[in-house]
Image (cartoon, rainbow, N blue to C red):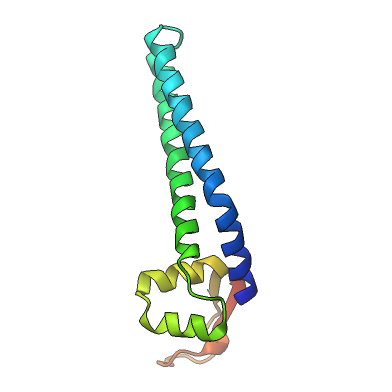
Length: 128
């Protein structure tokens, strides 16, 4: 898990600046589309479609930037540092950390009916 986090943090530190450039390019495209509409080079339907697509792209890029910032805010990538951080971290931050390295958890069928306690053998972790 630590190796996965270290790779993610390294990529985030390199990628945040690039993502800012991508965000600016998307915004520039939207301005160009507005200018083309003002000159009657494109229709309102086309402008509306361009605007919807750029808004979707902007949202995705902003989410990646926010994720990069969260990654950079993580503690030292030592087991002790992560354990110390985990104790005081908000539930949302813990979820974000797990989402970085865990794709999903598969819960297998119960082997005994009516069992109240969690049977950890039923859980299968799928790592990214």
